[in-house]
Image (tube, helix red, strand yellow):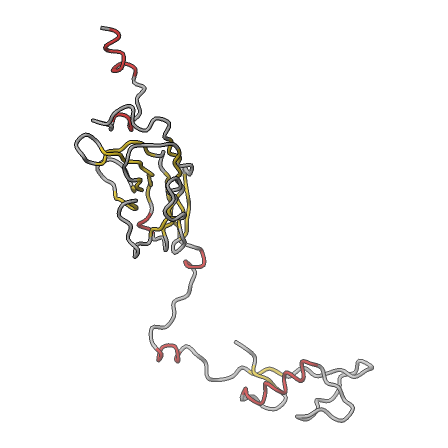
Length: 221
């Protein structure tokens, strides 16, 4: 009696093993699935990378990525049903051992726990869980610059109203003489033998298009 009851009393079987109803215990000996990431944080709009690799041999059956577990889960990637238009792609296309996936343009609703799962064909012909990773908890946050981004006017008229048409004029800097004394502002062109500062040259060029009076320049807002 003790020997017959031992498998029931040991309590050492994993949830994966308990789900292998009808799957032979000899299937996939030496097979291993590794999902190394425990937690991953990603910003909205970025690309999420979820790692999963396998080694050894197992009976035929796909590798999938599921979001959530139990009765509430969503298939994110199915090895046998790849959609070219999907946001989800393989990091190493067509690999038999690397099932790392990338999810583009992550959104807040992508937050959750993801599982890499190996399925095999059961006695009923349906895919049954053979082995799965520990799960990767994904958190999604908004970048700080996105939170502070100012709102833009919704129409051209509104944008025109927010743009000032009156220039803000400031005096042009006056160049100094060789002895350090303040020189008289030159006319639109420097006098012969006189070398105004670069700032004065820039001022002369800007005043021609700024709408400010001569000797002043339009200061950038």
